[in-house]
View 1 (cartoon, helix red, strand yellow):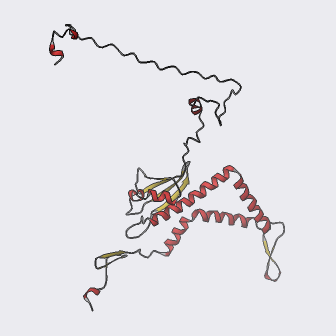
View 2 (view 1 turned 90 degrees about the horizontal axis):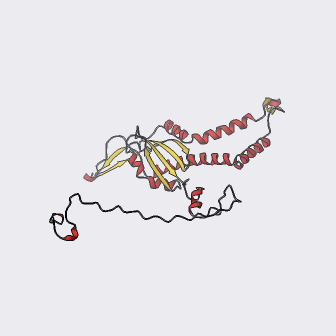
View 3 (view 1 turned 90 degrees about the vertical axis):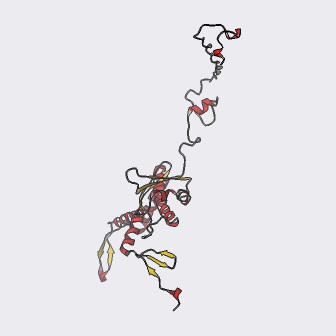
Length: 269
């Protein structure tokens, strides 16, 4: 057997070394833990699905055993299948038509999508533990005035600077303009990922009277004033007055004037 064909030596769980190369592989995880982690990530979708199924079953008619071991519907105890489907469609259209409910549902759905996108970006950027190969745990996501906020729980072996180095990748993954990473002041293993999509302080969103009065046209397009019938007379701006310079301080030592070129020459040295 050749000397260079020696078997690989194993160091720890999930680590093996062949010659001068070290291979780190992900250790096998418990299937129960993997299922629980999947349920935790899909908690919002599962909650909505369970709610819809509960309402669908609650509106269904009651059933009773009939002849030949079959079940029959009891008339007058619920809604038919087509009626329930039509009711669900009407409620969905009503929620989409109203502005406040549409914004609420859209922002909540966008928060859930952002939470999944942040986790996928961390996996692609390999922000993982060196041994267990686990990414940070996404705790919670909520919408804000500028975008969304996702809270991460860093596992052992991952620091806030590791997540902060991937700020541009996180913003690009979430289709946002910027991403800011902030560690929790009392415990740095909790990180706040702020996804910024819009700027509420943009000039086209601010409707202040200062802009139109500063431009000299208080009746500009898109502005409204209270007394529209009262003619507006522009007031000329006063000319800026030149500041009065104070007089030169008088010398505390009495003596000949400097124009005389005599007296004490220590003033010129």
